Length: 248
Image (cartoon, rainbow, N blue to C red; front, side, top):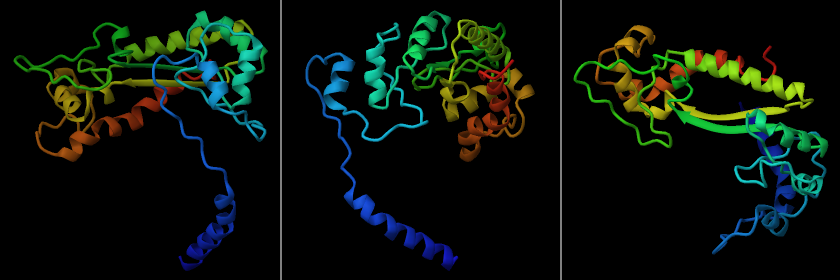
């Protein structure tokens, strides 16, 4: 233990001169009034990279230039600053992907979604509440309180849709380099206590969810707070794996 601590201290002392001489980070400034176009702001406020990016991927931003195909010089201006335009998981964006690829940019997909989606892509996906129970509605970004977490037909529908879309990109000669899906759906979007209570008052959830979620106790903050996170560990990875670009 002492040797490990000594090595950490020596490493920190060795890095201290480099850290002290590093340039201060750029701090974004708030712009009053109507903002100019993204690319104009980028060129004015973000200098080009001083060191080669190498094989590292560029960053993607929620806001960027456009999902429409752009001239190569636009994509080059982004890459020079370590940024690229992402596209969504949509076959309509194949022309933009082709333009990005032709300009030497990696094709990166990123898209948000949540609430009851994609559970609601299949029939019979919602909670079967006990008679007289009033559901708790969350105040999350995508309020959701209806989906049975253990009913995966909607995810299966979505997985087939993803495979079909990625095949279309492949047939068009596009290599998709990365897929980042910001899917904030059930069970997390229902909130911790709300999701627990709603599932506990659903006849089907009491039969399909594994312990301790089928318990009838109203107490136990730790259990109620941890159930979306705990349930997701054994359940979501196999489903998400079927949606990857490498899936057949």
